Image (cartoon, rainbow, N blue to C red; front, side, top):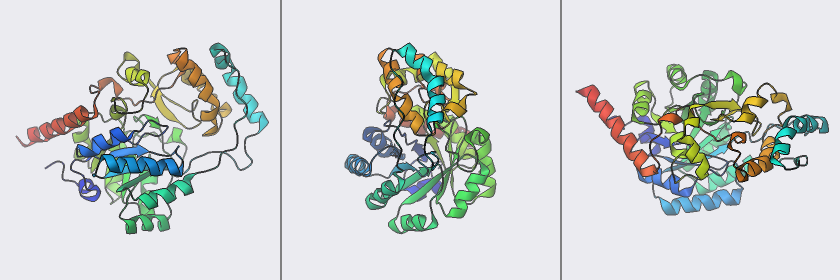
Amino acid sequence: MWYNTKATDLLGIQYPIMQGPFGGNLSTVELTAAVSNAGGLGGYGAYTMSPQEIFEADRQIKAATNKPYNLNLWVSDHDIAESGLTDEQFDKTKELFKPYFDEAGIPLPEKPAPFQSRFENQLEVILDVRPKVFSFMFGSLSPDILEQCRRLGIVTVGAATTLDEAIFLENSGVDMIIASGFEAGGHRPSFLASAESSITGTFVLLQLIREKVKVPVIAAGGIANGKGVAAALALGASAAQIGTAFLAVDESNALPIHREMLFSDMAKYTTLSRAYTGRLGRGITSRIAKEVLGNEAAVLPFPLQTTFISPLRKAALEQQKWDMILFWGGQIAPILKHKKAKDLMNSLIKETTAYFDELKA
């Protein structure tokens, strides 16, 4: 059967369908459990959370499902130089964004406080709670950590946006690799070269990686229905990871207006932008994303830009200035149909099965 793959065997799941783990407080226990209980692999993005919050979320997921699930962290969780943020740098950012703050009628924020990496402490929690799957982005883990995960029965999954990154991850000892195509919504998890130069499409990237690496590969980006899953499997993927379609369901923690936008005509237009977080990410095109294009040097490094823009986002939401907000979403959003996680999973399974049955006939 189409669903018997290396991924389903390794992950202990029924169907090779993974839900993208959303960071930034967009993941929920309800969505993660719904996908896992339906035979896929639910995912929970934890990179913004404290160790205690991760521990609590994991406890709740374990109470909601007895099936495998995935916790996700960012290996590199900031882009700030050792010297910190200079006043000159901050002044350039204020100058670029002042018109938007003025339009919203709010003052420019103070210079963001220094950021302390949380990754090592977050990693300790992962090793303590032992999820079946630990996926990570923006880098690789040391061989020692990967070996610890192996001993603890944790399957490790790294994310690659280029063939070089995939080879690097395989050489580090990771169990599986996500081929993250540039069609995907959210952040581009590039780590060997700039995100702007790492923009291969999902199905090209998948084929390149399958030619050169031996570990199972997961296709991610531009997949939202059974035909997409079938295409990924036909090209050699062991599983498909679906983000935007799951972000749009009621069980996600996306704001109602965010989910509404993903089902609107606006979803036809997406942009890769650094304007909102300091790292390149794809969302529904906004006025700020378009106007800041070419001025990335004046955008603060991640995650200080997130801190800086946060009051503007809050004011824009309150004033319903939707064109000032970047709502995360991938290029596939215009074909979205389902608003419930269970309906989406059932449809994915039914459509993929029908596709492969047709091939046999």
